Length: 249
Image 1: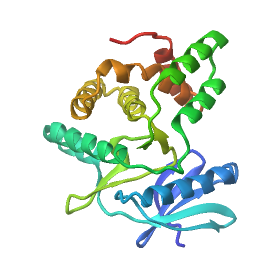
Image 2 (image 1 turned 45 degrees about the vertical axis):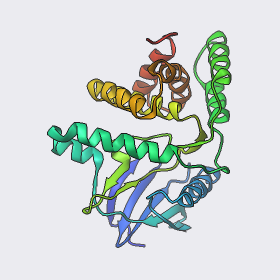
Image 3 (image 1 turned 135 degrees about the vertical axis):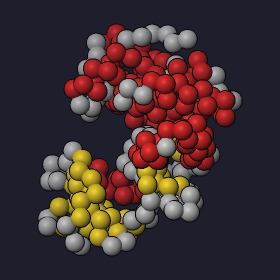
Image 4 (image 1 turned 180 degrees about the vertical axis):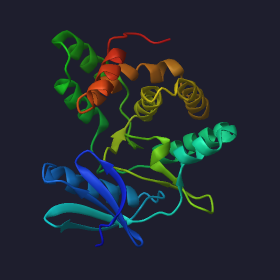
């Protein structure tokens, strides 16, 4: 595997392109169990029939664990949105339709979203009373078994030259309630100060799925708390500010 062409650098990992393959190479601090679980989850999502990069191999490169997947040629939806702001509504419509296509899938062996969020809330930097309130709210929410991407944002969608969308980065995928996934996407837009897009996205998601905005809003403190655990300091501060708001209109 040739590691000269770097596509992206993230905390604890570097993504390289070599021909028709992509290598996600993890540093030594990254738990092996998390790497193998990510590859397994991606393979399970492959089996749903969604357009995603195919796992080719899990191996070691220069002593570091790596996941080798097929390379998808195209532009991210985030790039297209930036290059063609006049088409934002069209792109948002496509974005929500792709998310709904994911939520319509089942993958019974994926980790459970409720369990993961309960664990993350327990780890969050919050007082005991707030944690108790969040656990109670989470456990009272309906339990579904939809495929939830967990980090669904325009930079994780590749649009090929013929217009086919492919969904990237399945490291956070679970099965659970689709409104929790929508709450996560909304918070990602807000985190990047794209407040107007966030509101348009939320309105579109609720209309297309016939979901009450208040119902999705009820997930916001839960999702914010669970996402605050591993975030950067500035992200953690933003997310925890949403935890402290008890009710959303």
